[in-house]
Length: 266
Image 1 (cartoon, rainbow, N blue to C red):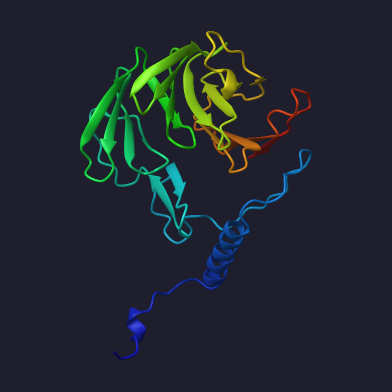
Image 2: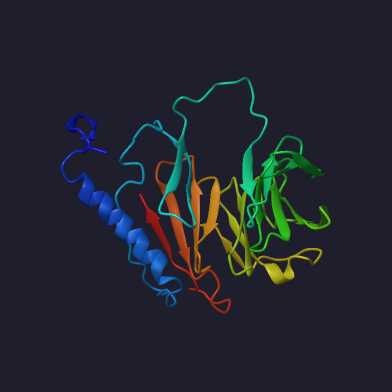
């Protein structure tokens, strides 16, 4: 094989190679370190990295979803450009089980469609009595937690594929999001009023569990909730306000206040 001709080389702006190398080095170092020491409860140091989609910029004005690959140095970025416009959406969201074998599609009228991830065949359908807005697995995929617009939280046994418990999210006005911490200690539920209720997973099977922390400092509907890998930071995101991100550190510290601090990226 001969050398690659000059016309086949991609032309990149000066400095872009250096920025991309820096991004790869940053993520590589982070993944290589694995578990690190506990985060400082009073201080969070961070800096803006190279934009994830700096090489493409073709996703449109609104970024709808992002996802990092857990094994490789790559990520998925999805936007609304080139979207096929239809009369209605059949599914609100899709969730992948921790073992990667199951796809959960959140449908209409409380339906949760379970598909085999390999052959994409329908395995089962779960039914909630309310309009499901969000879903989250625990770390081993044995439990699925769903939140409804009515404020109900459903707990599903994925081996039996049945609802084993249901309770009302205390003070919820329109359930919008839900997340389980990687250490299986906390369950966070977001609402359209901006309130986030954090529950101890060990207590949610009671008839009327009370949240161990209620975060009321958010000013807009909570569209997304996510914990970091060590379960020390809860990120809350609103798609109704530009760049609306809040990071809540040390959610519970022996049930004391100030047990957390907030940082807002604007």
